[in-house]
Length: 120
Image (cartoon, rainbow, N blue to C red; front, side, top):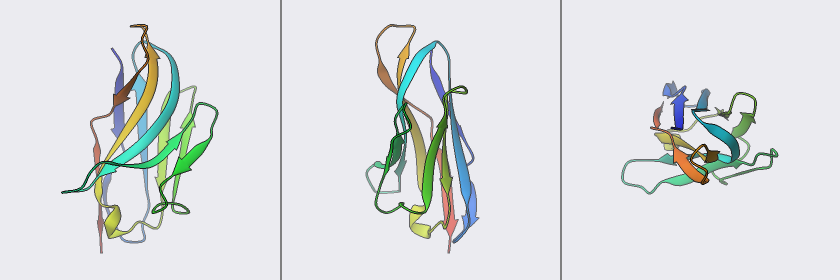
């Protein structure tokens, strides 16, 4: 059984910073791309940033130059460093990962989500 567990969310004032972490555990053979998505109330879930196993990244225009995604392949962990936070960044943040597990079939797993609230 594969699990993704996120941590690091919370309440922060505008202009502040937070660092999210997401650790994958279980019967994992390999992890391909990992990413962060977010969903604000009344809105669809959207991609924030994504990183491949080789370290190539892409991110939404709304967070470029403010958010940085990184990963530690030894720890099966992906991070999202969020700087210069704005109230519009308020959302539940979800990590996901494309994992080949002991079941033998690669699939995308999702974390449970962590709330990020930015006050003005």
